[in-house]
Image (cartoon, rainbow, N blue to C red; front, side, top):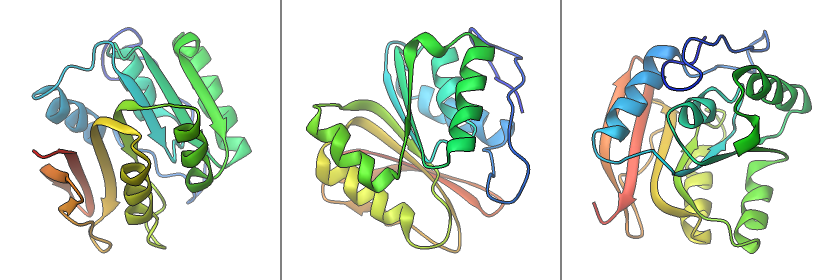
Amino acid sequence: MRVITGLARGRRLKTLPGPDIRPTSDMVREALFDIFQARYDIEGASFLDLYAGTGAVGIEALSRGAAKATFVEESPRTAQVIRANLTHTGLSSNAQVILGDVLKTLPKLAQSGQTYDIIFMDPPYKGGLAEATLEEVIKLGLAKGTVIAEYHAKYPLPDELDNFRCYKKARYGQKILKFYGYGD
């Protein structure tokens, strides 16, 4: 796994072994940013990476010019990997790693007045976390722009929640990326 383009292009990223971590592959990450950047500019954007895992998606956003990225991860070991990857890529100065449960952290971010241009979420597939997280992000008003959800085809997400609508959907095997925006 590596950073695809930008400031940290080609840098290898660390991961943890085992079934609990399933990093977004280079191919899917590249497609995600190609789809997003065909419509919006990432330069100067604020990025929120939920269920961050290795941090690869948020690191890619920083490498491509995002102004700042916040990573939320529940596992202390995995949060250490994110910090190591940020240091290795030289992108740690514009990043914040928050150790904690995503659904408990989102209200704290909202209370502190945080909003984000781009929010990426890749929760564990089982348990309804994808829809619950999407609903919470929208309810709390954390998204100024786009929310990108990665999920398994067996656990579909709705095309519309409140005034947030899916404007693009892409499938890669059993992984699906859904791009949401206001009224699009």
